[in-house]
Image 1 (cartoon, rainbow over the protein chains, first blue to last red):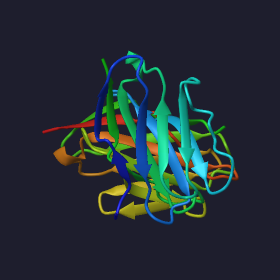
Image 2 (tube, rainbow over the protein chains, first blue to last red; image 1 turned 45 degrees about the vertical axis):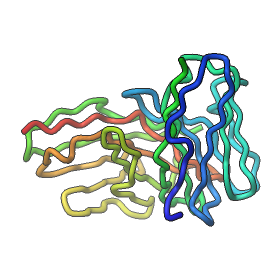
Image 3 (tube, each protein chain N blue to C red; image 1 turned 90 degrees about the horizontal axis):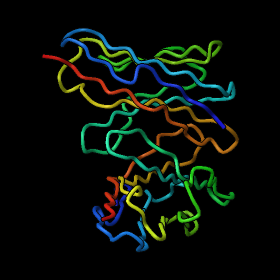
Length: 114
Length: 112
């Protein structure tokens, strides 16, 4: 595809269930970010992948959150035992290389925990 | 890690007036400074960016200035229009892995 694709676009889950969010970056982009955006709030950094380097996980809010990336392709963000405070839009972004280039955002996954 | 401060958090301007948003960063090695616009319910999109070897860049009604000595950069929107109403985020690319760090955002409202 031409842009960053995220799926699902919307997800409603029951408290305590696990969810998996998917991000397909633009082909050839080595850098990939996950952000969380609560309603009316800013971009909360979660995790950053850059090529084959160890990911920067410094933004993950708890051990219920994890993310994987297959090479320079698809990434999945997993939230275990979801809580109501996890409700937010989860945005993925990718860039050609981290080195001073534009990051392109996906449309986001709106997660609602009920 | 990099700390990017953004001010103000909200900005209301009369249509036709100018809007200015300022950001400061802490890492003197930062070398890339993009600005993103996020309209309600949409994804953030790049509107302008500047690199550390340039002091100012313009694109129609939008301009960005960079002061490396003071470690701050600003977004200027002239002749504001209702469609400029959005949340604007600044960012700085830092470190050996060039991670983008974002400011907290500025909600701009243009009053007709």
